[in-house]
Image (tube, rainbow, N blue to C red; front, top):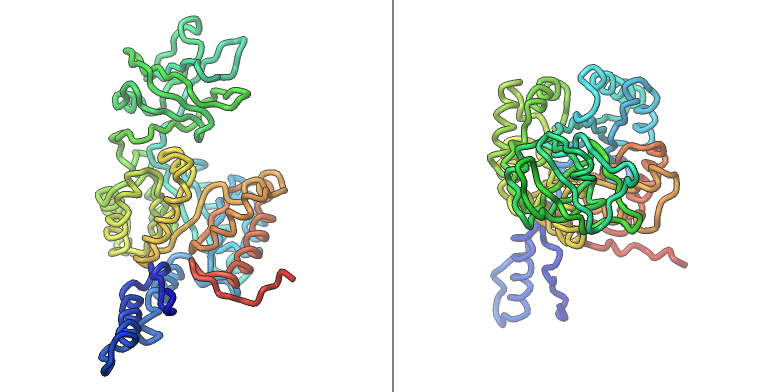
Length: 425
């Protein structure tokens, strides 16, 4: 580095070109005779960046003027009735709209898509439709709590049962499991988290009807036990197919109407092949449909290279850093480093990345952003696409994110500062 050579710290998208360039410079410094090596041409050197941008454009459409990154927004249910909602989002800079197939039905999805296409024609701006199939999400079903206390605290015990509720006198806190077969995969000592990690504990013992969980983590004010809340079992192989019966039924509509498909809980190349085979049954040109693999588990991170090879070799492909389930599965303290590894790996493979979950969440929900989430959104600009979730102030959040991404594009591309003129004084 002290001789002005690259530290090789920013070469993810152009490994061989960077090594060739450094080798040529080293030979020039050390050789007393003729230099036999040549520097890569600019076209060779920046080929990786061009491929990544081409792949991004194929998935999400052309970049907005002055902003390289794309903005993806989850549509709320009211987008099926409110034509102005999608028009307002698109006019503010949204590039793609996400429909979560865990909610609503094909008739409402069709209305959302029609409103998006009308907005596309009215604004002259193209929009891509991402339909996210639900996958085998394990949740609480029925719940029981004692009449005099609604909150769980560390030290309490929760019975997670296969389906039969017991008298509250025997088990004050109970919940049935939406996927009862999961309980057969549990063992004493296994960690369990509920409601996006709001509280959790370990399996203390197994009984005929389920698993007894000793609560170890909860807010100081306690945690409410509610139905329809997610259950996570980090490092447990649940043995679930990533495509449920509902997903297969939804795919009939999705394959015919979506530009991109979001694939939940995908963990292996075999999972990718399973979806590709199902798409091939539904349309002959299925390779034109973009595939977004949601990276939500430690196994998915470990297998990301094989996911890329299986998917990107046959159709447009992107990886989503799905930070909600991922943070619970790997631990909140490891999320930041895993984000970095996924960004580096995908850049090396010229695969676009979607940065998702809780981006500008306070702004979307309350109208006021936190300091930390603005910094998070600025870091998210290193990804090719940033996803915002639905909420009452989503239009304001889109405007804020659009401006932030434009300013960050002047400062930095990926890990490389652009060294623009300072404007702090």
